[in-house]
Image (cartoon, rainbow, N blue to C red; front, side):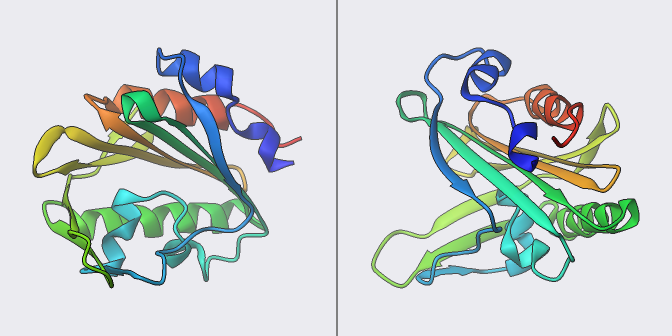
Length: 188
């Protein structure tokens, strides 16, 4: 079961040196934008969000689990996903497709607008890199550069581990540590 691969509440609190992360949602299918949300460049959604339907939709995944944890008091959010494919090649293809999207979007901005009168959300998209053999990227708020997300994705055998951490003053080592913790487990 893929759910057993994902980090628990206590593990996440330890990895991120906090105590306030609590479960928020769990999904069995990748999520997309809400009906009232519109992306200026849909291909760039893979930079700001992990396990997005726009990337996974035609990938051929067979099983999927995602869990979101949040620490509302510290504006910290952790989203972790694992997907199983028929073959290691299919898993690597999804990772390559995601990283290609990251490269296409590096240095650009992404705006999410809403059908109602809410102020649009704007993200400055970072350049992807590799840390400890794991593909990573990031995004920042142009209005608060210390606020943003770190992303990591990797394939292990026929599985994809796809994670995002959003908060303040985050580092690649934090998201890589989470990805490695998940990838080091066997799907039970």
